[in-house]
Amino acid sequence: MSGPDASPGRVPTSSSRPAAPGAPGPDSPSAGKGLAAGTLGLWGSTVIGLASTAPVYSLVATLGFVVAAVGAQAPIAFIVAFIPMLFIAFAYRELNRAVPDCGTTFTWVTKAFGPRVGWMGGWGVAIAGIVVLANLSQIAGQYTWLMVGDGSLAENVPLVTATGVVFIALMTWISYRGLELGERVQNVLLGVQYVALALFVVVALYKIATGDAPNATPVEWSWFDPTAFTDWSGFVEAVLLALFIYWGWDACLALTEETKDPQRTPGRAAVLSTAILLVTYVGVTVVAMSFAGLGSTGIGLANEANADDVFFALKDPVLGPLSVVLVISVLVSAVSSTQTTILPTARGTLAMAVYGALPARFGRVHPRFRTPSFSTFVMGVVAIVFYVVMTLVSANVLQDSILSLGLAIAFYYGLTGYACVWYFRRELTSSWQAFLFKGLLPLLGALMLTYAFVQSVVDMLAPDYGYTVLLGIGGTFVIGIGSLLLGAVLMVVWSAFAESRPFFRGESLNRDTEVLVPDEPEIYTRSIDGGLA
Image (tube, rainbow, N blue to C red; front, side, top):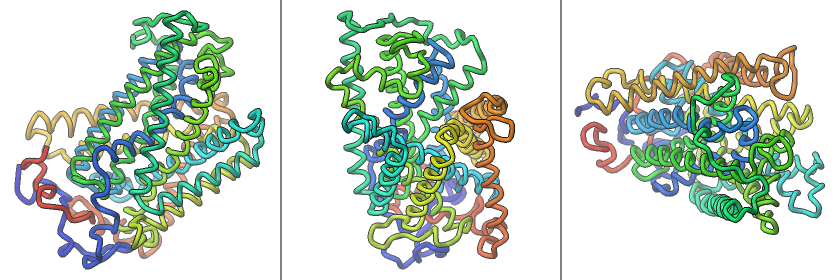
């Protein structure tokens, strides 16, 4: 397919596009929204995608709960959860090829379904980022003080909270100072995480082979048998938990305008990130199960006392005097993901402001650092306020906010899958590749996530779900659904302002709008179907 209609939303030239609110004009030294175009390559983009998921911390926070939900089927639960993630990664790849905009879900869903649905998609991305930042900062604070003295300072709530606030502020500053600095920091932090995981796996396997593992358990094929699940609700809970540990790979798509070859590199990085995460999570899970067993006492993975931090229970039996390496890796993982969560969320609100879905000040870009300055600082401040307030209210409320994250993730990932199918609906019969990657797989991924969302909402209504009860029902439900409804209220309020009317009337961003992205060499602005893979 070729011609002017082959790739709707194709990159325009700076001389032909109008300046958007808060964005630089066509004569500014940086095209598009003012971001630093051409900064990231495939490696850097993949690192950002991996770092955003916080591999070590994600395993720490979820492995025990997944085992509690499905027992020996934990490995297959991670594999099943990977399937919708991979399918949605294809949706991101295809949409990014056609519309390489840092607004990602917001921009794509708006083009597919209109401004209000698009606004809610953007809100889903933002609220997920804010909630997870609070938890990441708490983990960073706790693990910092676990390395001091006998570790008792990690139980000092004011000290841990203050330390977490410092980490959010530091990562906000690094994000503000430029993407190149952030990429260099992430290379180091991700390297530390994978060195620690490799050390854990190698030593654990050695001890299993030599008979030094206290609860050595032979690997069984039933661990990978999807028909072996005995409790459907437990299965759905495990899959939703597993969605959380994969979540974050789409950060590399939000940096698309700052990536070399933006129509191909971010999509490739997204698919590559999810594949690496699958191998990481399933591999480490199998080794941990084989080393510690599934007992409900001691270091057994089914021991409820270990559920919220499996690695803390295993660090000494596996690594002995080197156990501090795992503690450091969890700290590094949380800090790393703090920054890589700020990066895409700030760019999402930048894009919303550029097209009038948020006040214009959110679209301000620092002239020297080429970063969304106002959006970055707002993200940091809101995350700090949310973290402090949740901590003051109750540690259990903060825990329930994390459990509710799966709803926001399933919501905006699902919307993206549906948007892909609808946006490319006229192209689905052009080739089998288009039908598969633009239609069938994104649709299946979206349907899976929709089911997980609905089933989780039903389960979360139970008063005994999570750590708190609010309004007579599970606190997790109130926080999860309430945060999405808050977005709907804020959307209605903003739509009453005159500045928002071009967006909500479908004038500033619609299917035919040429998105405000950087100019690129001709090879990247050709029709996708005309030759780019």
